[in-house]
Length: 103
Image (cartoon, rainbow, N blue to C red):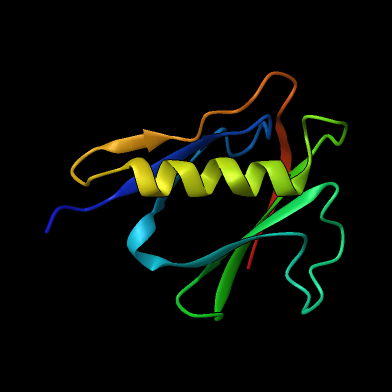
């Protein structure tokens, strides 16, 4: 079995490109890590290792820059990757990750 990774470009000056092993991803959801998934307009959360750790991505907001759209793009990259290569998450025009919280 080949490893599967996705890369996500960010505007976060301290982190740059985020590389994630998709084998550890449990779910990708719009919103923050709270049970209700608040802030879907500007946040997207990648839950890993069940629900024990997560990466919350913060977008700049706007029509093409919501947490819901970012979650959709991440899911597309995960399902498009057959393994053995890094699949880049394609950001739509105007879409950017401005910061992230890793817990």
